[in-house]
Image (tube, rainbow, N blue to C red; front, side):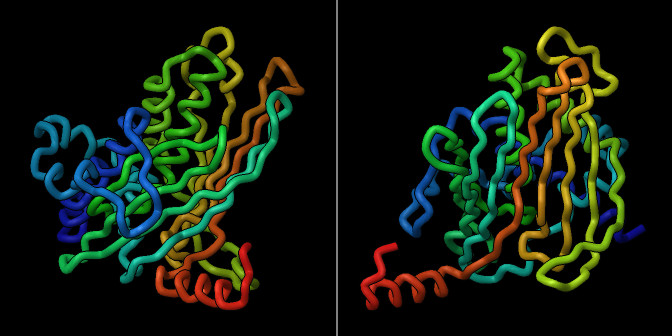
Length: 277
């Protein structure tokens, strides 16, 4: 019972800090991934926690809590990262309707203060595929899955003329009704314990016109506490039931982590050797 109470207590602050990114990031500017980032407009997760919702709202969240909610919104994915670091991911898109591409996503923990509060910036793709997200202060969970879902909601809006708010809402409700599945994951030649979260947000939703192509769209998140930041892979797969050639698959896969100190040393070695890559 004590563990449950602690879990519920932690839930509200974490879900708020991540959902603010999810809901509001479309209107804010990106920040560079260096130590000179201005955090004056960043999200303060702890300040917001004290102002979180009404008692009725809290109770509704508790009633909806699933193991997927716990894994994504409560577990402290970044707790083992104790110095400024960058987590690297590879993003891949395959589509029969649009150009395919491969890009990089970087979560940069710029600094960690005396209270162990983390200051985070993001680089989410480049060029015409780039998505701008605001910096974040105090997050204990890994925001990268929320960024993935946010971009996906915006993409569905772009392709259908629908409302991104609708897509976000269906994704959040689907997570709240989903349980995790224990699996074994082969990572760097070693089998490690992991959890898999799979859900289809639109199977029971009345969809019209072009939105109907997402009827069977599937989301899958693979996580493990053996991997820095917990998130190993996020995938979506869409196949239009009425148009067999309409297929889209997108994946975000963990590539590794480097401390900022290690990155500076790598840069120095390249500079000393004349390598400009």
